[in-house]
Image (cartoon, rainbow, N blue to C red; front, side, top):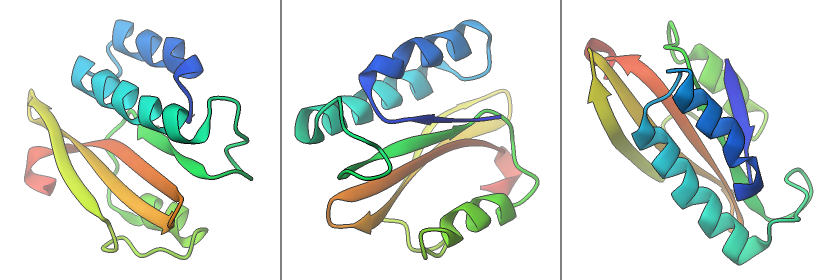
Length: 121
């Protein structure tokens, strides 16, 4: 499952994912941090597809390979290794949660958050 988040108004979706055990609290905390910045600088009423700012795309399940992410990035003409930031949010029970930032333009970024098995890092 993947969830697209671009404003703090959508945080109840994230809270539900934490409650259901789909994502750890560290992912929810990072989501809040990023959308708070987007809302502050670009507005909470922006059109995510037409206005500046960007969004987060959160994958709740480990991916078999990076092919799905690359296919998503292809629609923005970005390569997998063109990330601006690659961070580990947390590790739990053999699963590492990653946060990766891609800049589409000067004023539009995409943060991908996804779990992967420790040996895939």
